Length: 113
Image (cartoon, rainbow, N blue to C red; front, side, top):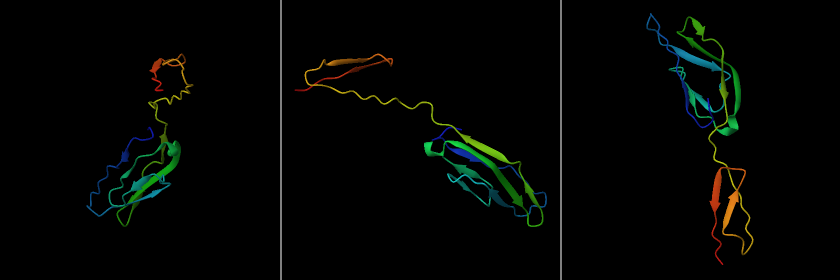
C-alpha cells in the first residue's frame, strides 16, 4: 500500500451457533484503529509510517473457542507522484526567463524592479 491511502481489512467470519464474536489483535500498527466488535483494521498511514509492519495477528472468540487468522504484514510504500520542488535564485536585472535543463520543465520568471 502507499502512504496517504486508506487501508481497510475486515475478516469475513460466521458463527454457525450465532454466538457473539469478539476480536483481538496483536502487533497493531500505531496508525490503525481496530474494532473488537467487527475485527476491522483500518487507517491511513503517512510518509512517517513508510516501512513494514509484520506479525499482525487477528483472533476471534465466541466465548468458548478462539481462532486466529494467519499472521500477516502490511508494507507501506512512499508516494510515487510527489511533485518536485524547484528553487530559483534571482539577481537583480537577471534574464526574465530561466530554463532548468535537468527537468522537462520551463519556468518563466518576471523580475519586478
